[in-house]
View 1 (cartoon, rainbow, N blue to C red):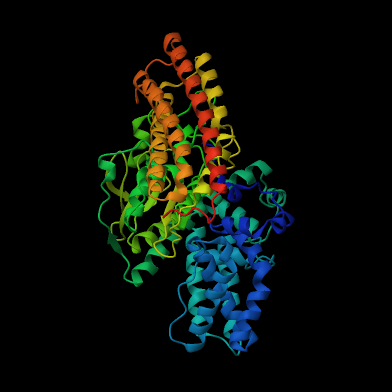
View 2: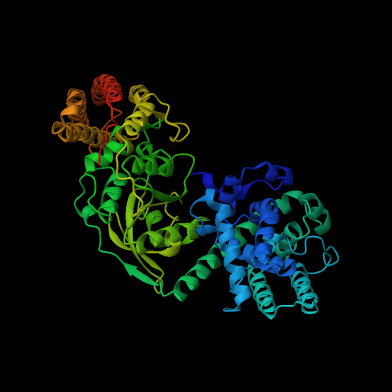
Length: 599
């Protein structure tokens, strides 16, 4: 995997301009700021500082005090950006932070809370001071901060609590830059503090532009890793101060005897059981659309095909169709990753995870995991041990470990190993236990199914083929004998399992409606769809036997390939007939008034 899509913003080229940032929408800037991108956070503050200042001034009736409070609030906001769950609520979230800071400051009930080194980069302290640029960057930066503190101490409204904060900031800044060597410090601080261009720095330090880019890239990586590490530690300190240091829920047991190949559906089914009576597994597979999905990677029918979709959009949408609200954190690759079954086994070991970079979404992921567990609900998490879904149902701050389980094993996972699997991806999903709609939106679910069948699903990955059209590229891969056996066998097993549950889904619908006379006209369409999907699963079961997972059989041998091509052609015809049946069911549903309600 060449890089995470959600991290692309923090790896923009050094030639990104202020104008580029100013054109970015708020949501994009917020997502960047949540990964520690200080320039994105700075642009957000540029947009909203005036509004926030007027808000605080209205609370304090003192412009000078409002400015101090706002500064403290902005620093605190940057520290906790990773805990913002809904980017659309950014302004309300900011107002709550500065309001709390104002009340705290005015009432003098608690000391200034710990401040974070990152704030200096967010607000560009020292950016206009060129007098220290010819000397040691780190020491001069600290001197600049010392001078600022001395100046503030002479002001009539000097706040001793601010002095404590300033000292803490200097300590943290020193710690941050201390991870860089002398030359890296010089280049890094010149870029961030003085806003010098790479060409100007090349001239200043007698380097080539290529050297400057290399140093900046290396320094950013070092600082980013330390930023993530310290952010996690700070988050844990705050949680522990509230007495929230260890919670373990009852261990989920469904993974010990799996009922489906679809780990997303299995995890969601188990998770919802902690909230109350969970919808059946066929209902979850059907309403989420997972029992109707087919996505392939044409080149070799890669193992990633069945999970080549935007987890956040597809799974939260599926939960919404079932009447549940949910939250998600993700940092996923833009293309298929490695097949964990084919890599060197050492790449899956804990030692290998420890050597990979910390994921920029680690703080957000841990926050959402804890949020879910504190409400008594495990969190669905991607790639605990292999690239599949599992559940985290507990945490222990003292040991810095999570309690998790998936199809492969149960056990503990170090905090900092989240997002450090073989493909270095993060996804966490948490369902809300309150405010549930609890009415299933079958019409929306089936409409999304038809869009997927037509290849109009916007949530699949690039370079994939989805829906009915996927059968043609699958057969082509078999014809040209370029199929990878292990991944091919996995695709077949997942597709067989999905269509089996599609049949069960329509069977359950017909049984639900059998007791309601006004829905009787819908039952024949459900029975027709049930039969079509049952026939598909039976034909696909032949392929499951022919190409067993994980060995995969011999899909590139002519006899077996030709047999697979013939069966896939038959399944495609059944699939097209099922599309017609679903369309007919939707049309019949449109004739009903009042609206069809499912709970």
